[in-house]
Picture 1 (cartoon, helix red, strand yellow):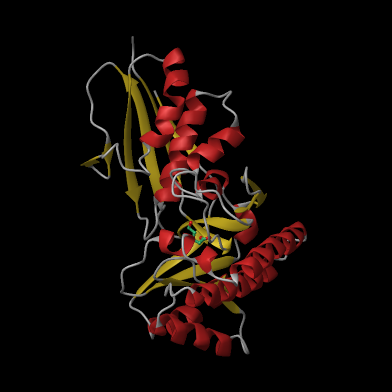
Picture 2: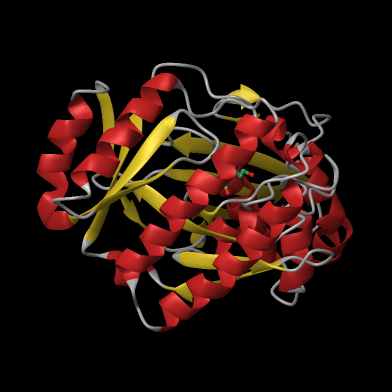
Length: 318
Ligand code: MEV
């Protein structure tokens, strides 16, 4: 029997209405609705490229060229194993996984899980997409954002589902500068398993759910600037909660930049987003990118220009 191969790519994501709090490390179900965008470096594709090969030949499973530990709790095999039987009903042979991250600055698990989900949905076109998303989130809770691309909302608690509400073309006139600070990022699970311990978390759930309702309304009217204004308010609320549970994502250096952005906003439109990593994302109109980059250079030497992108794609089969 001939071998079959499918390769898919997907971009990383960032929260617009930030996700915080997960039911447990295995199912990774949220306690509130959330929203996000898919992004890439503006001049080079930031992608996870994942290949599934079904063959009788002996191969290795690899991630970024290194042999993969299939027993890891968030291993891609947690997802592949759920579809193994169905895949082998159509194609016989061992299923091998190979994935590389290209130009991804931080946090690649969402893109990796979405690229893998795309490979599975190509091999099994009749697969239930909602079940697939629930299964992808066991590898990464934000895989749905990366799978669908553009601006997405993820709604539901027991069965959270993601859908695109604006495609990437609506963001063409906007640029995002990722201002990277030279400290190591904390695992997102510090956020997910500490936020729910706060009394304020009940309020956060209400705020996030309300922000998603408002966001959908703004998206319906194509009010892109207002979408990023909402994202900035959501960032402030999210990190206020993190500070209450001693999860310090926003360092003093990041805070200084965020405060300067608040001053600049009196003269020019710019907003910020901080997710779980060591970057402050500055959102500007394309025409103002250079001025904002000059401000950012006073704070960090590592700055990347980003743009909003679409969802996961099959890029090669054979
Ligand atoms: C990762 O699960 C979620 C954060 O990156 C926030 C977000 O992007 O919504 C920590």
